[in-house]
Length: 246
Image (cartoon, rainbow, N blue to C red; front, top):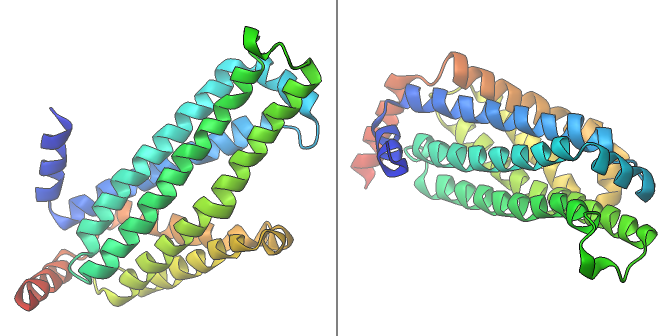
């Protein structure tokens, strides 16, 4: 089955099925991000120690490559989630849903670019002939620098756009009648928490507390979508009202 046919069938699916598929993609995104952050980067990257980081990456090269694959899976899953959320919340407000999708896709693009920095240490430390102009310590320092650039790109840019996305999705959930309003409030708080990454010193000062609402909000939304889906009758009422306005 081609991707176009699959997306067409998803578009024709019931809102409850769309919600549960969205929940699956949300869960897949969360699990892959947890894997790459906890089992790969936090395990192998040693802060302020370029030599130890380089040694760990080369000693666990397959695991490091799996981390890159997990990044790509998370990116692709969130793109699919964005498309499904646009379809689900379009009856509530087409313009706000479209704006949310725009911010999410920008965040995904930033994530995709930052993931390339994840591969930089393998290139720098792989013994490529044209890099012999640098000594080993310089190559190790460059590898750690690219990893820091990845983190700054993802946190200081990507999470800000994810924050705007969560803020708008939370607003749409709060306004809609087919999902619990409390989840909308939690998602808006998650978005505001992510926006604090606009100030790096503030974000560092508030960690790990800054990630409380994003964790609670997104886990609550994921579980509700997987278990309950949406209230189909209320969703259809909003869809008919939106069609009549158009």
